[in-house]
Image 1 (spheres, helix red, strand yellow):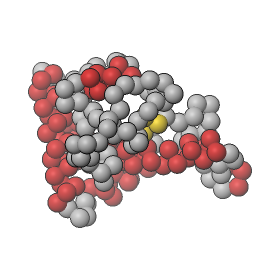
Image 2 (cartoon, one colour):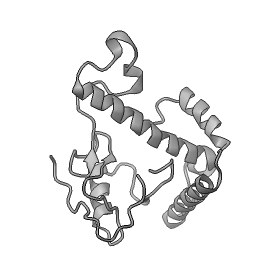
Image 3 (cartoon, one colour):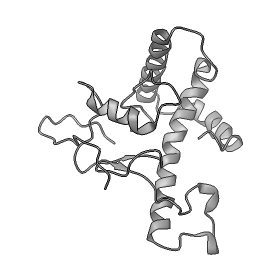
Image 4 (spheres, helix red, strand yellow):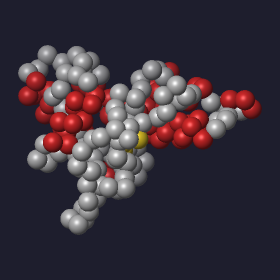
Length: 173
C-alpha cells in the first residue's frame, strides 16, 4: 500500500480460506508477491510473524479504541509497537474503505461468475490507483472518514531494482 494505492492483488480465494494459505500461494506464483529483504508488510494475527511480515504482539492492547491519555497511553515497548502497528493498519483499512465507497459493486454479494468477479475487483483497484495518481485531492476521502467513523468494525514505494534480494520463504521468527 503506497499512498493508499494497491500494489498487489490476489483475488479468487474463498473468504473462509486461511490467511497463511493465501499468502503462501501469492508468494509461490511466477509473478506473485515479492517482499524485498529488509522491508516488511503489516499483517494481522491471522499471519505468521516472519521475515518480511510484521504482526502485532498477541495478548497486548492493539485497537485504536484501546489507546488514549494517562493510563491509556502505551506502557511498554510491546504496547508501543502495537499502537504504531494499529495506526499504520488504519491507513490500509482506509484504502479499502475508499475502494468500497468508490465502487458500490464491491459492497454487496455478487452473482457474476468467479472469473468476472475477479476482473471486476482488479478493474476497480486499477481505476482507484489511476484516480489516486491523477487527483491531488480526492473528494471521496471525506466520505470514507465519515463511513469509517460510523462503522469501526470495517476494518512502500514500489521496488524496481533488479538487484534487490526478496524474501523467498515464510518461516516463523
